[in-house]
Length: 488
Image 1 (cartoon, helix red, strand yellow):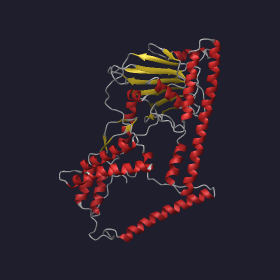
Image 2 (cartoon, helix red, strand yellow):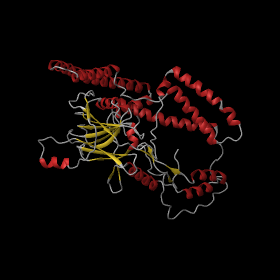
Image 3 (cartoon, rainbow, N blue to C red):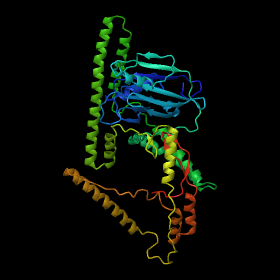
Image 4 (cartoon, rainbow, N blue to C red):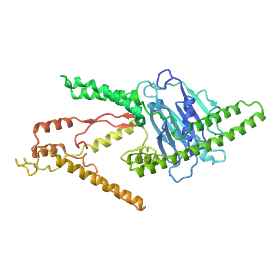
């Protein structure tokens, strides 16, 4: 049953995974989590450093806590893996070092939250004071704890599942607004592309009478166009589906399933001889899984490298950029907790949203100039040609743009050929557009003899402008923006 219904039974899991540094480890853990229909999986011995959160390609959110410094030893470490439903109920989370992490969830009862604490307890040979300090932090209320011995990622610990009677809240004031991307890769298929063109053309043909009719507005026309494009994408392309990493082959997935079956054989063994035999078979299959994952990753990188070299030779900058982005995106990019103005870490979701609203409210609402300039009307006869551009002027402008791009490409190509360093500096005047005083801007438009009617149209598009911020898949409350202009 869904997590957020009032009568749902929520399943939690806790698992010592031994390490999450192995290639494809997070994917295997997420797969086992979905297989046992867990909403929250508590993980220990991640061996990850620092504190942060990471969204997996399959949709799960991983909150992790480890040693503070990146160069610290890769030991200990705890994490919480949340399903898509559990993410909606997440109120905030806290890191308490490499052994304890806590997350708070809203419940059906107003003002009552459920705190889930995952810990990695010190062993008996630890200092007694350290153990006493650790255990004094723990408070937990759970019921009906059982192990799931069939879950498998080659760990010598069993998955524990808890059944909770406290229901999470059903209705929320703000829902998640995570955008889904359409599978545009299908457009590379000629048949799919032609089908997409036919369907979109038929839908646009129906707008011919609408555009010429009376009583239509720009908003209604845009709404129809948007609905036609999105419905065609839904029908022909569909959404991207990421249930596992794209480089993991079907053969590797079969080996993972075989390892899972061997784990089940160990659990069902009746004699020591049967168990020893099953354990030996499991160990061998586990080696094959690790070897297969490394082979898949190596082949994936080699194929990407070959494709990138071909794209560079052919001058296909778009494909080269996409491949480079894939290479650079392989490392973990943690989402750091938001900090207050005093430098204090904010882990509560609502407080983070309020902090972002406060930040952008100050950024996009700059104080008015102390001494605004006295702008007078421009002379009637301007010193520049304000008439429509000629064909020759347009052709010259396009030619100049192409020449600059071509020059830049030649420089990049020569630097690659001679294996020399190249530094390209793109200058961006920080907050230049965000700090424009609109009152002065309207006067400037009048100074250059822009018709007042056009000035009023532009001004009306800015008056009463409100913005919202997307943080953690949720929209914040709106705030008014009184300064700055749109770019582009």
